[in-house]
Amino acid sequence: MATQKSQAPILLLQWLDDSETKEIRPAFKSFRREVKMVQVEAANKTEVLHAITSWLRGNPNAQFLYIGSHGSLQGFGPNSNEYITWRRLGTTLRRSKRLVVVWLGACHSSHATREWQAIHGKVPARYVVGFRGKVHVDELRRALRLLLRMTRVEKVIYADQELDNLRRILCCAVVTMHYPVMLPNKSRSYLDVRRFKEKLGITFKEYLHSRRIPWTHRKLDGKRSRSLHLHKHKHLTG
Image 1: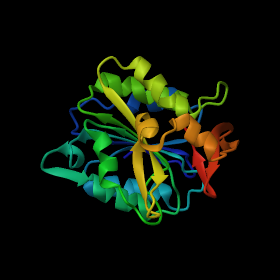
Image 2: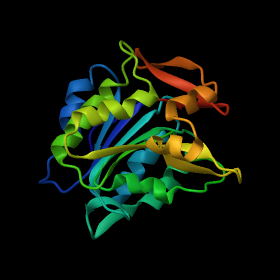
Image 3: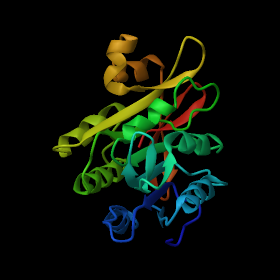
Image 4: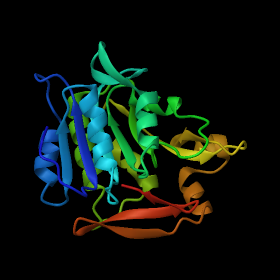
């Protein structure tokens, strides 16, 4: 494991075999001077869960979690013999007092939110960026660099713009964003932002505005990241 920095707003977590390319290494090298980040290369399931819980515990500035690994419809991990289910990841995240944005750099990772439906109480993540189907490591590298760039405030990128920006730079992979919405039974489920018009009758951008979400700024290690408030909860938009 790499040395961790306390109060870091970003955790870059990789779980792959030793011989495989790690997309978090160049990203960490490029952005570590701009913002505090935790870089962890986990060797097993225990180290993955420990890295997440220890980063979240007592860290009021925790905002963005990136997980890079192989993915399937069931979960993520270095191979088919050792993996963490999407449901287990959601349970781990829900136990924390912090609610963070989750970036899932893995094949089939959009399936995670299918396991996080009809939730009563706290949701696992503010919103989730993932991939439908397969994604190549080169595209993961490009996506992660852009996600990190979009935390800057020199040119503010809002939540409703993030997905379009990602899709412009990816030639093959299908990137998705899922956002939690309230259901008639007062539970919450994650909805693909491209389906807001179909399901809710308004676009994702219109939904954000309809909730009267005021945009504010939060300090992020000397810089400022964008945040918003919804239902009395703070939402950091990446």
